[in-house]
Amino acid sequence: MFIEIKASKNQLSRRKLTHGIGVNDAEYMVQSNMISKRADCPYYLKWKNMLKRCYSTAYQDKHQAYKGCSVSSEWLVFSSFKRWMIKQNWKGKELDKDLLFQGNKIYSSKNCLFVTQEINKLLISRKKSKGKYRQGVCFDKTKERFKAQLSIDGKVINIGFFDSELDASTEYKKAKYRHIADIAAQQAEPLRSALLKYKIVE
Image (cartoon, rainbow, N blue to C red):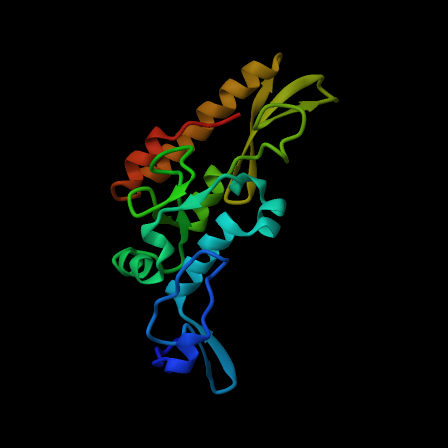
């Protein structure tokens, strides 16, 4: 459990920009040692990781989908991000920047929301791992036909076999959208509408 402990003037004076750009203006220590165990401010961790995704070249070399991403000037100041996060349903969830506005690359209070890991995984593009065929499609050498399949909760669901890759892809998308709609029905706004508007990117 994290407890806010007021930072001394000396500690405040030694602070540097987070990832070379973010201003940590918290009046307390964002990392503290409690009974020999380090505790981190949960708001600071989310903020720091957001900056890392946008401004760490080492991170972007491994996760190239974040190249070109940035943080709004408002959120470059920690206290501003924290004020927003406190009002969100964030516990156990991940910060998402491009579900409300698909393709968005700017983290800001207007563009972001917190989503469960289940929803985050549901919408992750598989461009690198899907192989030579379209997303959700593989070629079955035994049957010499294209197979469409969808992963739900870690289980692979076979949709069917088709004569062409395009037909298999079409049926995969139909099944995927049905699954997204089922999950959307369980969500509150604005997440529900964002999920229903989501477009699968090849």
